[in-house]
Image 1 (spheres, rainbow, N blue to C red):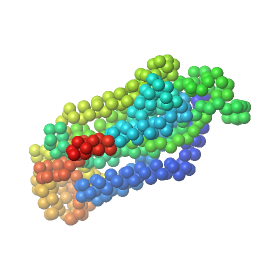
Image 2: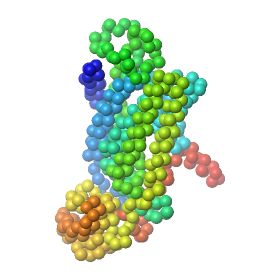
Image 3: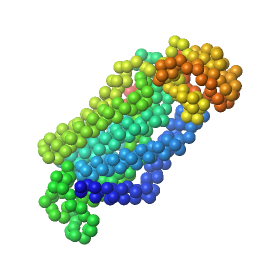
Length: 413
């Protein structure tokens, strides 16, 4: 099969990216973002700051995996990056971010640029190429969310729809994305290239805007460094479940958009469908996620008896014992604990080994475990759901852009 011949070329180009400073700059930025979140978690919950080296390595590994898969899809589709107008997409994405931070996405920028191009012929871009690129990037993002979107979820306190103070998780992930894209070019002579591969007549799925009958039309591979980010909040379910259905809906959106891009390449008059579905479909994905979140009851709420675990530090002896989010601790060394004050009081008399009686959410059974390695007078590494003792909380309604904040200030005056 002819595509098998492309595999060494794709991997060669990907490996070449590891020697470029820009790749390691993106990795450093991701490390910095993880460190910022770890510091916020430490300060908010008064727990030791966790190392972010492991999350950074894991994110980088998954990013490389996503880059490999994304490269094969881009090559198979035949997206030519010179025809997507990256400069226009970035300008529009930054302008949209000033309105609202969630609009910092190529789905909106690409959709807007494509709509303007469809009606006015400017900017000089290929609508099928633009929307195919948007689709492939979101498909890779869906895969990365499925595999690792739940890892390192940061616990938060927030207010539910009915005003109650509840526990939840902030899912923030960042991945470096080394990818290989295609560039369609017309060269004076093709016989000067020794490694030209003859592709099937049907390839690429999305043809270049360059003259198709030109015998000097070649597609070349170009290594590119990109970055992907994922942000979400869950108050009603575990991070793993949240990331699963978020990935599912995003993947469905991506596949439909890719299909519309291929359709637009064959029937240019239908290109408006892909241009409109980019931003509107992305909004639908967000709406479905929010509807699922706010139509269900919060999961991490203070129980009638005991204290519910929201999170435990990875270095905590509780984590080694298998105690995790959703478990309900009933007693420590025989002393009942029903709130944060009870917990603090019980730990005053704890030694290096404590007996914890708890209800396991996963096993649905009552368990008793002896936890070793506890350091008297030191934090247990336990974060519980908020009770009625005046915890501060995160305002999850934030995320407005510069223009929105400016308009609010002007209205206030």
